[in-house]
Image (tube, rainbow, N blue to C red; front, side):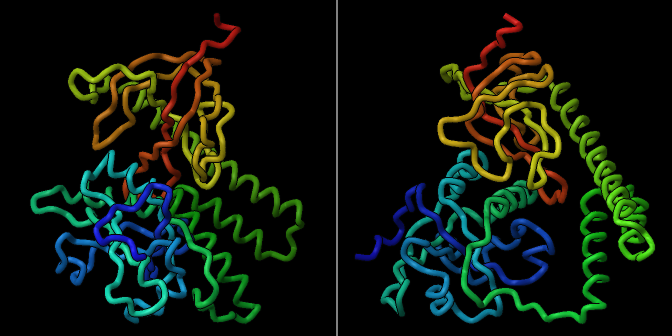
Length: 345
């Protein structure tokens, strides 16, 4: 029995979307596509409501979906958890949802899994910056969906060109992410890699120095971000007469696949969700707990102040990375039950 068209998908579901295999939508070396990959097409905008095509993984495989979709060139499937869509909806866009939209009559196996994602269009008069931030948030939740070939076609390079290309890509990614301030370090590292006269120890030393420079830049940037957050008075973003909540939000640090700068001990890996039930973390420095994480230029007001060694329960990550930024993610945490450390009681 096919699902009823227009019915919203349950939060435990996962859907996927085919993203064109182009640098325009999937930047080289990026962990996820950019927001433009979720922008409704001119064809999508002819529908009412406007929906972007996605597929229910429990009803349709990527291979089935390929056979059902129009041929539009090479594309890669990226997954998206419905629960993440709901979380973004609660913060940014009340219209955002994923609904069943089975192909009727069926045109082949997997037709029942066709779905539509609403709320990705920009309403007349709405802010372009907020619209872009919404699309970027959705894109940052996407993840590559394992699939048998076809996948990206790679033309083998001659062995003598392979090393040069790899060094160039590494240099370009480093320059784009951390700025031209590290140009000299990258050049020194490239020379070290190319020179057969350099010993392994010298090469490793140069690599370590480049890594140290990168960590120093990240640490300095994160510290400035932290100081900006701490110096902001904040506003009361809670609805009028809302009951007080034991939950609050704290700035955790920055993440670039792994933690690159942290303000708490005991943090779980930053590239995956917080374990169900939460995890206990401990403050490294004094820090404010706020009523809400930053959103559209607003900061939640201070609800409490933590001291070094204070413990609390981390329930979820909240990314507030600036849209379009290629730097580390700026992660806040939803926390509750702050407990003073035994040493400070």
